[in-house]
Image 1: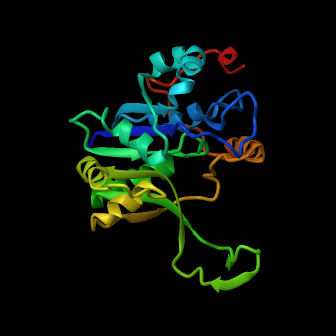
Image 2: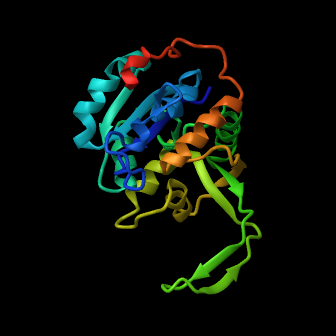
Length: 246
């Protein structure tokens, strides 16, 4: 069985979330923190052998105070993030164990994930070496200038919007990060593409939203109600008392 490590980047500033008390990965959602929802489905899997969450160094004390019981219970490793997301993932990669075959990177602020989508992207990554969840672009795309005037309408044909999880062979991802130089990618797949490796798209879902604003939190709460229930609990399933989220 291939062995997977899961990295949750959670070190962003959450500037658009605009909450004086919480950054978006740590905000309460349906009784527990967003990042724990994002992590939860991976804790049920026998093929996931390592769980890593990367946080801003300034958040470490409060994070450990609020979530220390869950970190210990779930076997999560906590690492310091960097200035940019790419730096955060790079720091987490240094902690991935050598026996790991594939690395899965999933947004800590993307809590509405299902076992079905994880199964599909994991399987495609094992078959090909690199795969990501994505959805076809359905909206009309407009390019505008600085004044807000439309200068071009672009075809959406064959365009897909990338999501996470994004899953790669460990050696490919390590090489991609080692060779990135000063390049700042918009996602991890872009770095692997720059190596000349093929990255494959697996159909995701519009329900797999990323939390950006408080409106997204309200939407995510409703989505969680209609997602298929998680598989039967494994040894990493339980969560600590809900008082930890208050």
